[in-house]
Length: 347
Image (cartoon, helix red, strand yellow):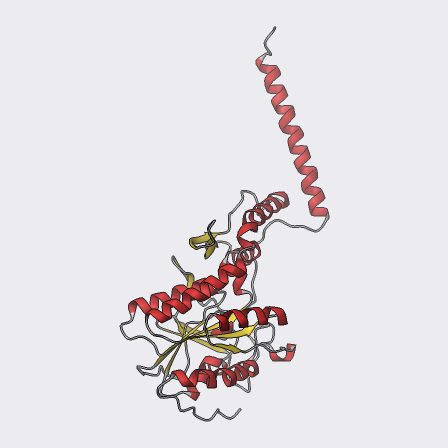
């Protein structure tokens, strides 16, 4: 049999490559015709400050400084977010010095995103309990796992145990805890060039909790140029995340138990404030789970109207934070040796 000549092979390969390119071009045109676009770097909201710095363990942490939001003022008060040394959101005009410390753990809701320092529930609790020192470790976009890591770090580095640890839970912490595909996409879109990793957990074949290294959203070549490449990237991420996403509720429950156990080892009371759950069944599930596992729980859930959110942002406003402080204060008072509650500040 006569072997193909080199020119014939090159011609066949060229024709194949051209045909493949034509098919890709047609597919790309069809995708763009539906309104899809390549991956873009988001512009973000003008003037919204960047308050986080990368962290190899936690993914990111609060960055000390004074940050002003572009949102409208509240009764003439600028919306200023103050981060103290130690990655803490300010809870008073100056840091209170007390050996009776209360750790506040949570996400942007506990942090009080978009609010003046004085409108967060953490600040209001500090006013209610002036003999205690409230340490607000609330950090934007954190999940339960990151809060556990913060708790462990504090307990491991501090000789004197705190008087109390309070965790502000919202249902969205569940998909964050397993690095759900949609959450990976959100973090990647907000930090496209930083390589931000999300620490997450999964379950092994026996149902035991596995701690994972921070995951960075995989970058497909040409995803910023071709719609097809972006579509393949998104499909890949969702397929690989499917199994761990199905574990999010159980992973979250095990993380809550880990937080409880770390506190028990140091004789630290642990309380969970449920701040946001969208359904009654979801609220009942977590309330029952916490109660059945001897974790005191505060129900902070309530309907939130658009008028009760930060303008142009959507986070709960100071009115909601005041209600949370009202609900949390009597629940934590028994755990504080100097627990006389000061009268609530006048609005």
